[in-house]
Amino acid sequence: MLANTFVYGFVNSIILVLVALGFNLTFGISGVANFAYGALYILGALLSWVFFNTIGLPYLLSVLCAVVLTAVAGELMYRFVLLRIRGMVLSEVIATFGIGLATLELFKYLGFIGFEYSLPVFVDTSIEIGQVVVDMQRVFIVIIGIAMAGFLWFFTHHTRTGLRFRGIAQEERTALSLGINSDRVAMLSVSFGAAYAAIAAIVILPLGTINVEQGYSVLIKALAVCIVGGLGSTGGLVLASFLIGYGQTITVTYLESHWVMLVPLIAILGILIFRPSGLFGEQKELEERI
Amino acid sequence: MSDFPLLGVRRLYKNFGGVQAIQDLNFELAEGELLGLIGPNGSGKTTAVNLITGFVKPAQGEILYRGRDITAWPPYKVVRLGIARTFQMVKPFYQLPAYKNMIIPLYSPRVKQMTGGKYGDRNAVALDLLEEVGFERDALVAYKAASALPQGYLKRLELAKAIALNPDLMILDELFSGLSLAEVASILPIIEKLRQQGKTIIMIEHRLKELFRIADRVIVLNFGQKIADGNVADVMESREVKNAYLGTE
Image (cartoon, rainbow over all chains, first blue to last red; front, side, top):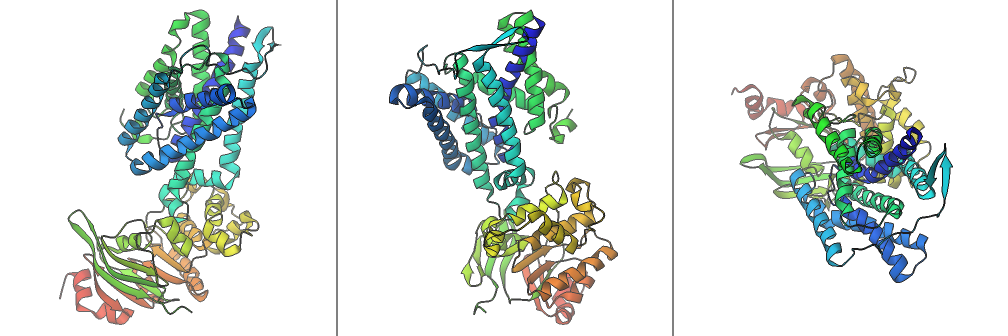
């Protein structure tokens, strides 16, 4: 049972890393808390389903098209809505939450409800890790989750665009004075965040079905991880994912599965009471208020 | 050589709510000139610079660069034309080492345009530029995070970033503020060298003694209006300037 908890806790933690990376990337660079993130996650999955099942494209091509189109959706959201309100935090939250809500409800209205809306697993087999049987999809989740976190680190530390991302994230005024178009970089960060949401959905959702309601729970999970870790901190995100991920697995194993959604909510509550800027957060003004 | 002055500011106005920050500001700047922009606190010096560099949009008026209207252009486009600025309150990329702070301007479209995309070894260029403004190469100070640097080095870093953009016009906003006499004395030769290279420079300064040693011309602002424009001796003899600075006739 202990080995089981360890292995599935690890997988669950990487799922949270995957789910939160895009949200964290967008917030860390542009300062925009994208509450439409859950809708972009479902959009990525549904686009992939439509390209594969309705249009009949090969699965890899369907996935590619879905990721690109979700990234474009993020770009359009920035260009036509966020560009005008960026920096006005309340307006950003209302606008993105409104877009997310409308999109998810539209999916329901269009009839994307049912067991037929599911994505195929990459390889239908399983392996044994220390006497614990794990299906290959979960192994892929771990590999892709680590690869995506690694890619993000490499991108932000060793590429020209990544350096611009970090410049805007640290001091937008200084970056502007050095010739960086901050709106373009912010738009790219929303777009990248959306692409990450789509990839996360395509990797994770083959474990079940595409349920539109998951758009809301994904947003809560991403928020919980980012708030507990400290908004914008990648190290904090990984640590918070493991705390909440193992917390959820232990809850399911030793308590009851219906308590599982309480874990991220309790984590948010606890961190907001004792350390409101998060484990690795840098918003000192929040600390000074308690 | 262009027929137009390097910079032309015409009938520029800016208000913040009911406060008239800049009123009917007019001046031209020739290539190679070093202009001192002075005035009491709150006289509109930094607002004027923010208007020229696109950080603030004017209510009225025109800003011309080599005869081209750049009024209300965004800052990143103004930089690409060859206008670089520093800030009074320096805000480097604190989490990056000093030399990495230099890499961002070295990657900029302006530098790409000037070098034809052949950047060379950026780390080496960054370290050379930092050495030029007084970062001792042997002390490894260039490798320290900007957050660990004292004010003197932060000001030098700010200057080095502007130099890295290879601008034609540099606007230095209170570069000397917060520096010791010795630090100012060590930066003055760097500015002299920039002039010898043909750079046009606008310096906002409160350290008038040091500014007057190097300025060709001085403009004095008070309550957003230009009250004097000319060489140092004439301007400081002006009755209005004495009034503005000393409050006496």
